[in-house]
Structure formats: structure tokens, C-alpha cells
Image 1 (cartoon, rainbow, N blue to C red):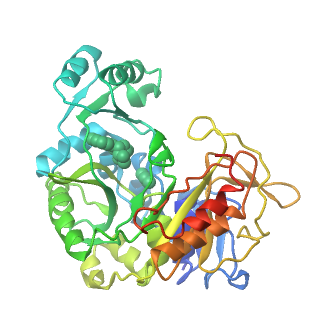
Image 2 (spheres, rainbow, N blue to C red; image 1 turned 180 degrees about the vertical axis):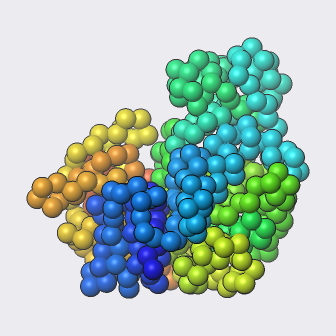
Amino acid sequence: MTVCVVGSGGREHALARVLARSDDVVVAPGNPGMPSSPGDGGPAHPIRTTPAPPEALEADRFVIGPEAPLVDGLADRLRAAGRRVVGPGAEGARLEGSKAFMKEVLAESGVPTARFGTFDRLEPAREFLRTLPGPWVVKTDGLAAGKGVTVAGTIEEAEADLAAKLSGAAFGDAGRRVVVEEGLAGPECSLLVLCDGRRVAPLAPAQDFKRVGDGDTGPNTGGMGAYSPVPDVDAGLVDELVETAVTPLVATLRRRGIDYRGVLYAGLMLTGDGAKVLEYNVRFGDPEAQVVLPRLASDPVELLVAVAEGRLGSVADRVRFAPDPAVCVVLAAAGYPGSPRTGDPIGGLAPDGQPATAVPGVTVYHAATRRSGDGRFTTDGGRVLGVSALGPDLGEARRRAYRASGSITWEGRQLRLDIAEAAAGGAGSGGATAARSGATR
Ligand code: AMP
Ligand code: GLY
């Protein structure tokens, strides 16, 4: 039986490739870099794409990748038609669809989070800002593709940002309500868990790089790279984080009558005062999926079906990961995260969309590519490709990801050169320096 992955980005490409280890996969709508057949050197089962709406597909099992269709109730509609679905219904997806709702549920669950207020008018929001020591954080209530959060170093910057959001000028209706909160400091960690409505099973922790520039400079993006596992977050700490940040939340959801079956993603900051939740997402992270899923050593279809059927208990002790770390470097178009330039021909990809130059352990996940008449790939959005590499250690995984990244170029390509650098103790930086040659910054 075919598994359907809903979405078209790098995360969905990673989902398709891992699921195709054990079953045929169709991605709706997918992108031109995704199709593969076992002969291509890809996974054991074929991956195809379809422009048909998910509801029209014969498939019985669905994994919904992005937040927007979840917030829009796609999981409810598919379940109403008797399908097995990984992804919460619209009520559960409000955790991501409204940061104000998320904060309310966190507070009700006693989960540690930054001190906050929710506002739809400027004056009370400004007053609250002045009670915080700074840095000051202003977040759109609604969805903003990972770009709706501003961490301001001065109160003037925070006030200007508040005005731009609340007026609708910056993010339309998504910003007419905002969450204002205290700035926290510390390393971040993305902890993704599978949840079947009652039980949770953690996946391997990952770290994402949200700012566009090296050294965490510049505006926030959807994510410029990631690695897994995170050396400082061992199995004991994962259990602790699940206990403090996830289990109480799932209990609150149940009390509210929400049967949450899908992936819960806790964005955590490990502060001097303990771990605090910055946000919840209701899906796999992108690019976290591109480093967590390739490491999965359990049967992916069996796991996801157990989530959809509410019987994670029968398989949860079997969520296993390979020890080899993974590093993903995102190659983005000129102009991202503002208005990206599109239509640039991409050099260094073979006809199957994988690197023309073989580097061991590397998979290129397509996020925003188009195929032109002559079969070549061109850029078609902000985050274009995710170059992921597995290696025997973090330094080697990094070296491989950057070596392959250096062989894939186009006009104006942007990439960060410090993905996983600190965690790898600087190892693999030679590859990053070489990757710069094709980059413009
Ligand atoms: P969010 O979408 O809420 O995860 O925010 C995106 C990014 O903004 C996070 O990954 C952090 O890097 C940063 N951020 C969010 N909230 C805070 C906060 N309270 N203090 C400091 N940085 C934050
Ligand atoms: N990488 C951040 C996210 O998926 O929201």
C-alpha cells in the first residue's frame, strides 16, 4: 500500500526517502527533485509526485508535512474519510497556528516558558515592553514561515517592530495580534516527539540555525542548517525534557478533548535557569527532518502507522537511531529571507537531482527547484536545496556536507559556513572554506 506525504519542501523529500525504505511513496504535490526509482541508487521503493489534491488519492496512510494544511484542517478531513493520518487536526494545530493559544496552553500545563503578554493594541503592548529588562522579543500570533519573530536589542527597535506588526504592514493579519516576551539566552535544541494522543516517543534531538548569517547574525529564516544528535543533550536530558516540556502539554490537550496524533516539536532554550519552551510546532522541523530522519534505524512506516492508530505503546521502545551523526547545510537563493531571486540555473546536479560529484553519505533534499525544458534544475524559491551528510563523527559529516555543497552552485547562492561548527569543535571547517568558493558571501 502506498504512503502519501503531503507537501513540497526539503522536509517532505526527507520523509519520502525514509518512508520509501519500506513502502511505495507518493508526494502531493512534491517537487521535481523528488521522484526516484530503486534503480537510481535511491531507497528500495519508488517515490512519485502528483498534482492531485490529497483527498483525491487512493492512499490509506498520510503524513502531512507543513503547518498550513494542518491548521486548515486537512487531517480532520482525511480522518473523516477513514484514512490513517500522522498530523494533528485543526484544534491541535492551533498550537502552531496561534502563538497566543500556545502560550495559554503552556501556562495551563505549567511548562517553563518566557514571561509574556498577548496584545492587539499598541499602547498596552508598549507598556508591557517597558516592564521587561531586554532583549525584547515580539512575535506574530499567526503563521509567518518562521520569520515573524524579532529579538530586539533596544526598546526602540522593539517598539518599531510592534508598530509594524500590529498595523498589519509587516505580516498582514498574522501580525495584528502579537506575543511580547522576555528575551532568553542559551543554546537551542529542537526536540521532536511522536505522539499518538496519549503516549510520546522522543526522536533524536537536533539543533537548527535560524539566522541567515554566520555567527547567528541577520534576520530569522525558516532554518539555514541543522545537525543531529546534539552532544550536550544526552538520553538522560531528553527524558527530563520530555517530562517537563512535553508530557504535561499532552495531558492538557487531552483535558481539552484534543486527540493529538502526529509530531510535536518543542523548540527549547537551555537557559541558566533550566530548559524553557520557545515555541511548539505541530510537525517535523525543516531542516531538522533532513538530519533526524536519515538516522532513523526503526521501520518508519510501522512507527508512523502506530502514531496514526493511537498504539505507539506497541512500538515505542523501538524508536532507534543509528549512531552516525548527520549535518544539513541549506543552500538558499539570493535575497532570502526577503524576496528570493528565482529562475537561476543550478550547476553541479546530476539528472536525478543528486550531486554530480559523488561524496559518500550525502543526500540532496530538494526544497524549491524547478525543472526547465532541457531537464536542468533551476531555483524556485528561498531555501532551494538541503545538502545532508551522514558521517562516522560530526566533523566528518560536516566535511562531507560542505564538500558536496561546494560542488553545487548558482548565481547568488547563500549558505552559512558555521553549521555544527561549535558542536564539532571546529572539525570539518576545511570543507566549509572550500564550499565558500561557489558562494557569494
Ligand atoms: P520561535 O519561532 O518562537 O521559535 O522563534 C524563532 C527563533 O527566535 C528561536 O529559535 C530563537 O532563536 C529566537 N527566539 C524566540 N523566542 C525567544 C526568546 N524569548 N528569547 C530569545 N530568543 C528567542
Ligand atoms: N526549523 C524550524 C522549523 O521547522 O520551524
